[in-house]
Length: 277
Image (cartoon, rainbow, N blue to C red):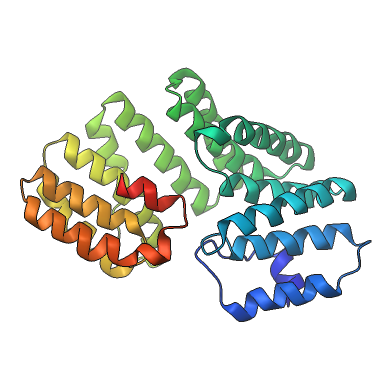
């Protein structure tokens, strides 16, 4: 079972049952030292399951997996480990490392002709370039994402391109274009509802604030809190909107009663200080 989980990349970035963590640990204790590819994948699967609850241990496991994957000379396993390490390391002090990881992932994905992985490395690059305010280079990466979307012809990649295009429109101040491309949560479409809440919900929030229509966001953010109680972003966003509306007492109540109530669960993650700020 642990082997199947490792090869299917079915770790959980939101925590995992203790019995599954124990399963990975048992498999690691039994696997032979010579099977480097399998050990690297099992270490990676365990690290992903510990992503939120034990981030320091997860990073150590991934760095061990990276050394072993390089020794195994297995580019597919190496690509998997690099991808998870990229997801784990955060903060400006990791910028250079993240760029190097993503550059290596792009080279590997092109060599392996893995279009899906290439798409996601292009997406990572797009995000980094937006953050660095390099619009020209960001547009080039967006064009590559469109090219790969057209070859892959899967809904997920179409939605990812929509997200990136909306972000670019918001950056340019093209609010009408951004609104036309935002896909709001649709209770009748369970396949994309969560994706819409996490991604387009955030973009919709920025759009409405830029339009001076922040009052329309309160029901959406309260729905997000109800549906995803451990995601601090919705609580921080609600407090921010209430402040914008001059409802400071309600904002403080939202912040203290909801965001701080989950502090023990999310303090250890990169998300908590970001959303408190």
